[in-house]
Image (tube, rainbow, N blue to C red; front, side, top):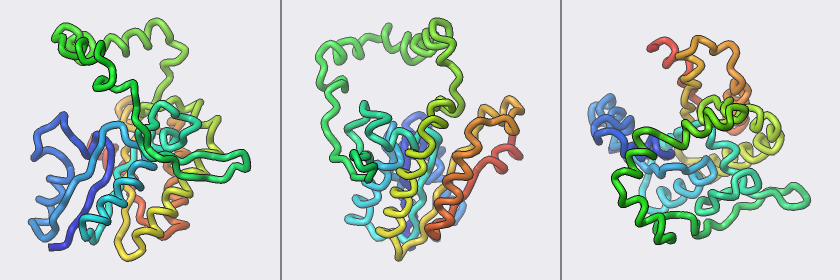
Length: 237
């Protein structure tokens, strides 16, 4: 069988749903077993880490098609200077001459396995109830810091706009690199819709539309296929 490898973050890791509800599994069903579909997902991973994961996939598997699942926070979190807290992932960094280099993933000492008090706290059912069910951190952000609660699609559009030039340069590098390293494969970028804007009937006022245009143009320039899920999710909703 031909192999489709789907690479992404928690959408592909899909620990929150049953195995037969994840979209790589559903994709295999659509093709009626003509293709084998493997999923390679890591919660919190940005686009830069997808490049890293694709290198692992290429080393161990012979994919015919690579699908990269893109969400809005994949862009700024790929840049070390904009998101140093994700040093455990491969990211890109800008030197003093504004040239791009790839970083080496490092141990993130803030993770629970490196903090005994966190390991102990996470064993508490009461804490997990507050954090996961009641979502106290989100309540705090909403009511104690409302000026910072203007997120759309899990990003702050104003911050993204401020870093637009750097994001453009970083994503251009990453898409080009992915294409160069997979020139013998079909490469598809699938981008999640701005669903909150669809649900609120405010798609025409979305502040993240430029990010879809940016990735569409970069993919076109590098002969990479781009699928924007916005019209499909809007029609379905």
